[in-house]
Image (cartoon, rainbow, N blue to C red; front, side, top):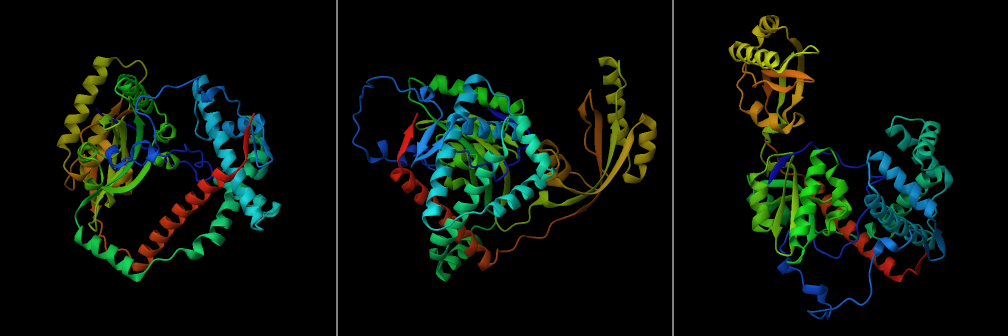
Length: 448
């Protein structure tokens, strides 16, 4: 099933650290390619002795001697909930607290490792970052402090997260970045591949993957259908991506730009049939189910028509309170007829008078900034033509008349420097994740 949902912005970088630890590979390859049991010697018909329920664990811990309290967890969870405007039931709130506990554990390990390498983030650095983040949210530092108290969080919790981010960045810059090198041959090979793949379609996808045994497939399928229903109601895709069992859960399910050949055939087929802004799923794949969200699509080294800048005139007809359905339908039919007969942008004013419409001009609208369901319609218009009426009884009915279009230039090859920077960043992130995994393994963590 493929559904239209609203576009979802990415969570702010400061908050996106809440992640699900997972040993599964991102679902760009089928499960057959992933070794069963991660190469562990596991029996096929195993029996669980006792009950494993992670929700029984209280959200407090001691990490290498540093105490993470229930208050720490509650305040950070309150911040995440408020920033993303979430309304959680009791079960979801419990899952979020466990996610936050994992985040705080990683954050503590990162700060401790930075200090072990003589990296200390001073109060003045934290205060400067706090002021910048406050400004990003349209608040002064004092207003931010008051807001944090209001939502049940605290300045201390917020600054602790800032300290963790800065400490980890400094540690990476010292221990990893200087030793990450990319050869000229690697850069040239990528440029060659880009030239050979010119015109190939690429998809910017987000994914949610949940494994399912044959016995649980119906249950998992139904749960993922409920996810999609909640997305339709406005809950962000990234919220559900936290529960994904793919490694991309840490990035809000972001797979980045991929070509169809990089995906399992059934997911490739779904991606090719989707429009930007659509969610598809649940899609059954070997080992479980996936949900895909198409953020964007493009053709390699080709101009994207959706980067065209349009000059538009918008006509809007609003319904007076108490308008009956029959009256509204008649008004829409009249509006549709007038719009269809409008002969170019110069006649918009006269058409507006005929139906009592308001007119708004905008000379700098990118196609990709329009709602996804309008993009294909607008791309098919000639200058002077109008879209069919669209809208709803509450906000009124609208139509767009195309008055001009500046088509984008063909995309050129990225510079060698840009390619090199991209490879270095990817390798640095991979090594940083490996370092954090090793630090987790060596840490002494006691849960209370």
